Image: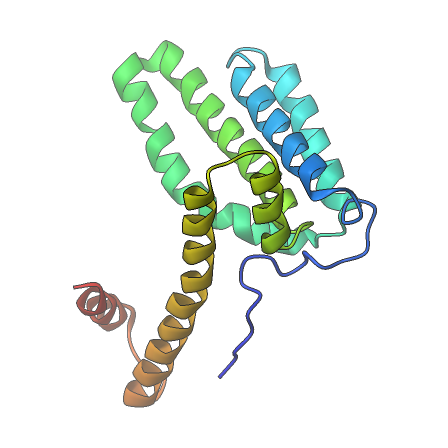
Length: 186
């Protein structure tokens, strides 16, 4: 069984120029980028492109592997696309598609900024930076609790997958796999 504890911040302890920045500065840069991405009007596509180039450059500078970034964005896209497809229904086809693409681009941009922060700063440093910036102690403790128990959930999921594979000897059809997964959820 693979028992790595680097699910979320696998590349946070690197040695790139981005890793050497102050955690507070990285947190503030990430927040500024997210605010900028959210304040750009949907119709101003060149600015979305510029922000995308900034996010891509930051991830390249941080030496985060492109395949890792693409996989993470791939996990984000299904729910975002589901949400974005509701925009043309609610706003009409003319303005709805513009809103839908805006939702997708903003989501990818803000997610990329968060991905950069998490993969250039160890989580305990992010928590310390949040405390230094004056966030309430209770909020920081809740974040630490959530982070710690994320690993417990991932480890339990790995055990359940191992148990399922041992019961089926690895041969299970897609329908049976979905039924089994649904039973696990409840």
